[in-house]
Length: 149
Image (cartoon, rainbow, N blue to C red; front, side, top):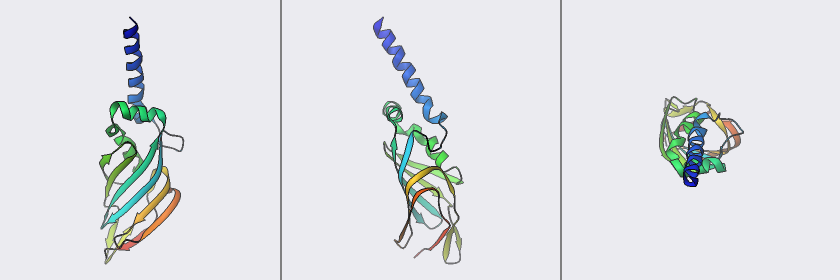
């Protein structure tokens, strides 16, 4: 009888954890905290490497059900981008490809500002020539241009 009660409690806890990320609204009071985001531009596309921390309940969720279930959360972060492909999700990092994030204009590529669905402590842009630009505590990318070296 005691084991049945313990199993029921575990099932209820697992169910609560299973629905948590999909029902959480992206805002400043949330279960995920993005500490760093690095955008590496490759022609019109960008590879985004995200480092994040999870609150204890979300860590338990990832432990029980796997980090792949966080996919919708990362799609919500890039809500303003048209073509987003999640490449990899780990326990504290993710790699995302955003396609057609810039457009070519002659010998330069132009990137228009996009809003992010979360605040980022440190956003770093890495341009094809290796130069970088950093923004602190931001919710948007920035208008910029770069050449393809």
